[in-house]
Image (tube, rainbow, N blue to C red):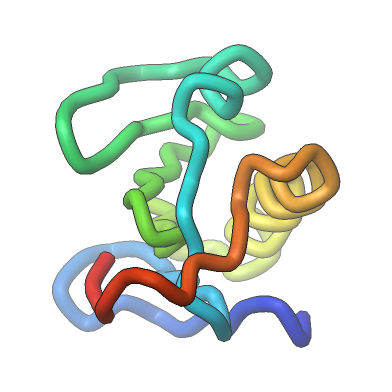
Length: 99
């Protein structure tokens, strides 16, 4: 799918979990200006991407709420293509592991 991230079914929810290959830092302010924001609270942002809910975490992990793998791939590709190109997801080697 991508050299940038790994997508797998989530075992705790009806969703797909997408994890970047490298530790990232996310610019929520910029991300929220491009995608429809459902809610933003400390530590996460929920977006509506092509009718699919996507929960984005500060370190680049994304939870795509759908059982349809194709829809999940389309949603995450939309996020990463724009966010990485614009520099909203940046490699962050200064922080430890986490979300």
